[in-house]
Image: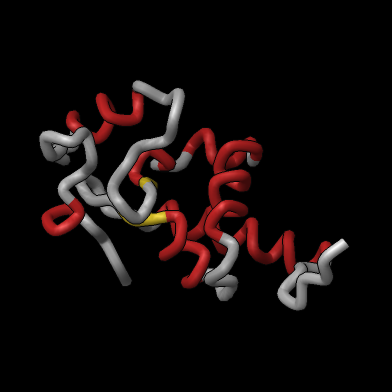
Length: 109
């Protein structure tokens, strides 16, 4: 098994989850950010997939604007067709390839 030098302890994982949920709560209406940006802000830049898992499996995320998180190309989460509807309701536009127009709508702290 490969040794991962940036592996989290349980305490770090709990802090990461709290940080992710806090960051997502701050994404402004009509803007999006990326899984990778959230991971970097939380101090773990190589853990963008863990951001997605946190949002998917944390009961607290149900009350957060998770629909405002997309991948670095502006793609929405696979299998969540409502995400695009929610973003469009906030004025977020999509390019012809179905990706969010990241130049216009990307939010970075």
